[in-house]
Image 1 (cartoon, rainbow, N blue to C red):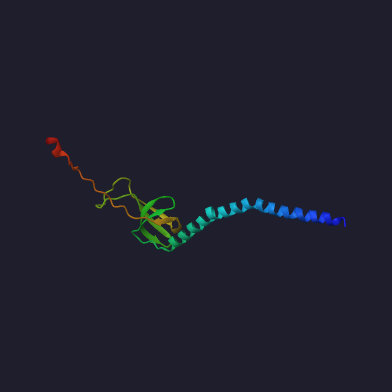
Image 2 (tube, rainbow, N blue to C red; image 1 turned 45 degrees about the vertical axis):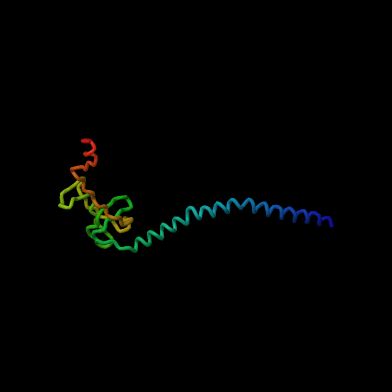
Length: 136
């Protein structure tokens, strides 16, 4: 009979500890859930976008950006090797700025297709709208 109070005390102590241990584990569970949404989920989205981009074929003449940041136009495609022309040539074929360079990249090094930038032609004669105001 003397064991009964000890058993009741032991049961009471374990129920109090289990609720306390749940509160102790709650911050750890919250950290794991937050880590999933902040680290794992965005990485999965990035990988899915990369897989979708890998399915999009590149063609000769497309302007692309590599994973290293090099932007160029695809000149030739031989299997998984892409030859890019970097630099700039004017419409008449003359060099403007740095000399164009041919670089060969593997398919995995091409990150994305970029939109071509239309060159802006500058006028030699600026338009002055306030010339009439000076004579008045």
